[in-house]
Image (cartoon, rainbow, N blue to C red):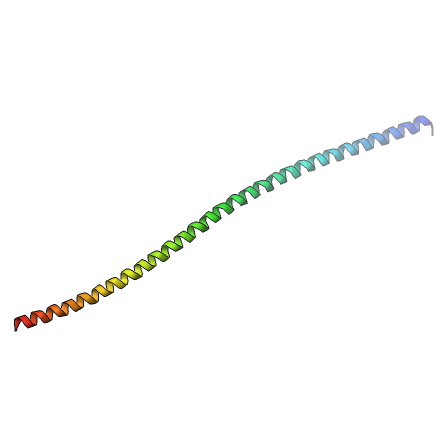
Length: 107
């Protein structure tokens, strides 16, 4: 094999390797682009999760305020029910007293 033949074979091998390296470089660049896209998606999801967490915390606080308000209202209803029951007893007692008064007066 002559030196020219060897040089031709070596040149062909170098061209092949250059093609392989170019293909690998393209694949690496494409992979980097995919990684950047996924990273961007993940960052977006993290921002969304943080926003949802803030909304959830706001709703939890509102819920606690509503629960406290309901407890206060329940207590007010219980107190009002007690007052109404007392008034009912007083009205019944007053009715009996008035009836007794009318009976005594008619005698």
